[in-house]
Image 1 (tube, helix red, strand yellow):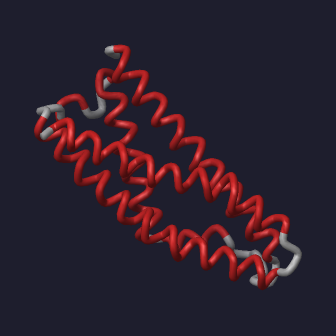
Image 2 (cartoon, one colour):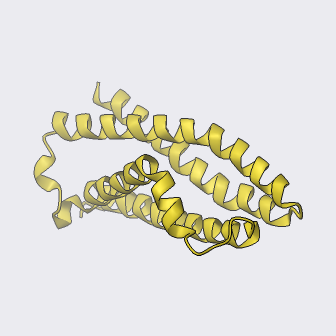
Length: 153
């Protein structure tokens, strides 16, 4: 049962973080090449609407399987310790994503306060920059988790 659970857990994370990488490295650069503001908004909203459902489902599956794995393997005690750096960082990243997905509208209004609604170039630059940070932190957490798990930290 545990190997199947690990497989579901990893696949959900691949879909979730892979989507973040795709949006960051493909969608935003495509948007930045568009001249028409309305075209940018329509393209982004269409892409975001589709990806948001996939991301939410993947984050939920990753959370459920992560909790089950910690429980079944009896590893709750490793959280917030050096030996549990991988699961701890993954839990923090997961919590950050849950927070972002639950409060997306409030986060956007905070990020874009003071930015005129019609200044789409500036808005998409801020969105792209925030996605680069999210993507790089996510990839770093994955790398640390893999290194920690395979090196016996």
